[in-house]
Amino acid sequence: MKPPALTPRHALFLDIDGTLIDLAATPDGVSVPPGLATGLRALRDRLGGALALLSGRKLTDIDRLLGPGLVCAAEHGAILRDSDGRIHATAQRPAAYDRWLASLNRAARQMPGVLIEQKEFSLTVHYRQAPEHEAELGQLVERLVGENEDAVILLAHSAFELRPRSGNNKGEALGGFMASPPFKGRIPVFVGDDVTDEPAIHKANELGGAGLHVARDFNGSTQMVRDWLLGAG
Image (cartoon, rainbow, N blue to C red):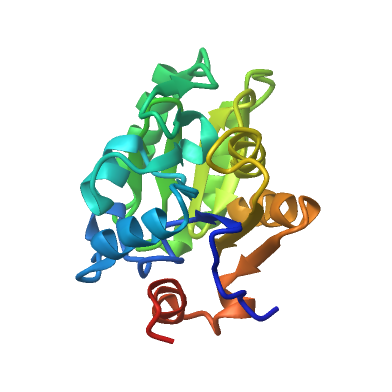
């Protein structure tokens, strides 16, 4: 699908890692291209405020990378910041969170390169630097989640996330934003790169807009995404 020319009729939703910025070996190892944060705010203003970030990252991470104040759904929609700057949660920590954390940290100490990332409502097991442990880690997180009715496993790029069953995914977050100003009544456009972005891709299409995938629609290039957004391409 050819990315549309953005106009004030559109509402824009963007994933961050693998979409706006290149993936890195660790979440803290990413590099934010110069001018991206400023460019996003200029684009937001041209769209009448109808720009939101939909990310698996913590809210504090989003603000550290791209500056504070942007409308966003953090932790895949478990935490929302609306256009008035109000922050509210749509989930609760699974009851077994602390037990999971202890077990995962013990495992990581035996698997060099494995990183356990703590979020407000979930835990992410990163194995990008230790792909040989993927199967073993997958079995571990399945055992930990087990029959916990309040939790699920979310698959991502070289990662497993143990997260609440309740709370929005990115598609539900997009739909929620579209129900309120300044997004309401506009044509949604979403760009993502991961399996965790598929719900938002489907929701944008369902609402009559465009759900775009970096690999399919931008030749796998975050630079092409930035050029399209910021007017260089």
